[in-house]
Image 1: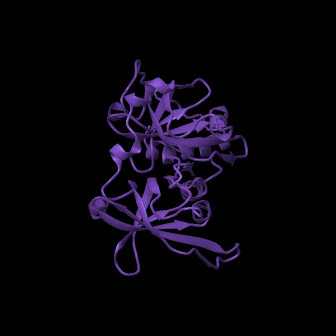
Image 2 (image 1 turned 90 degrees about the vertical axis):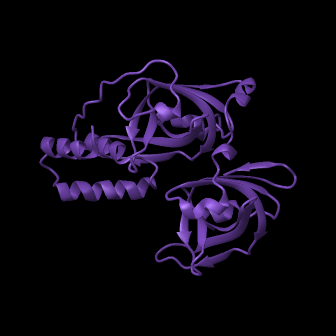
Length: 287
């Protein structure tokens, strides 16, 4: 079911809201969830608040799929891969439905797919059982289209998560396989994945935010064999990166490109970006 079909379905079954109000709710949910959930999923959450029943698609699949073969609308999906990013669980509250979710990014040999864990599945992230670097098998999920038109996998009450033994680790690639070369940053759009070494770390600074505590920003220069780029970490990410030093190895997953004040490209890191770094002492940090 497309986003527009969902909108029409909700409007047809409730007289409490107009299309304009529904679109405002959708935007509010996008802002609240930080872009971690697709429009189709957010509309289904809104529908549940108003008691609107939205029929699930009836397409099924058996066997283990590669990320390249995933399409929206599948209802019984199993994939396997390496967890390259784990984002903290978040809660949501509605008039008739509340709960929590967490998101992962899983890599196999064909690509990367975003995974949304609902309710008790998100507990695996909260209690630290599910971590970046693990090889996992995700069973009985269903697929949706995110707000950018990409397919994502959702795991609900009937789904299962199997953490594979260490012997399986060599079967799946690390994030470095999908990292973009710094010299190629100007040729891409949307989220980027990078891997490199820290060349310089600059002193953090603070700035005022209206009605909020002061914000914080930390800049560092990241380099790979193709070039260097300035990375800008904001607020909680700036705080989490306070121990970053030159010569640390850094991986960035889901970072964003922006043009800096001097016209050069910068890589920006906020709460929607997963970062891990390995210090000179070889102690691995994941944030």
